[in-house]
Length: 107
Image (cartoon, helix red, strand yellow):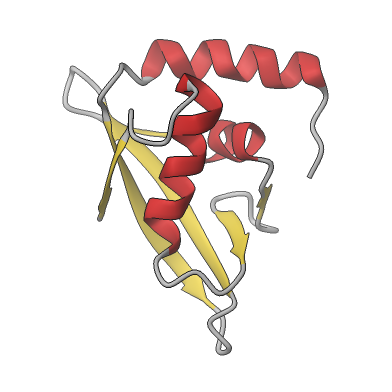
């Protein structure tokens, strides 16, 4: 999905303030289609206070994905073997310019 450039820039600033370099992004698989071609994934990060912060909407904006109808998960379409690492690499590229700055783990 195409988001307005101003929205992408604002979202990038917000996410960079919440996601320090070398952070681990935790993904949660919410749904997988029968065919395996679509997955709904949420993205969270652990902040200093020990709380998990949901990054799904901002991460969707930065990576160009859409949110599901309920607005709680990112819809990833395609035959990815493992959508979580692919998504986090794409988010890392959008925020930091390379695919290895952010780490991935499943919750």
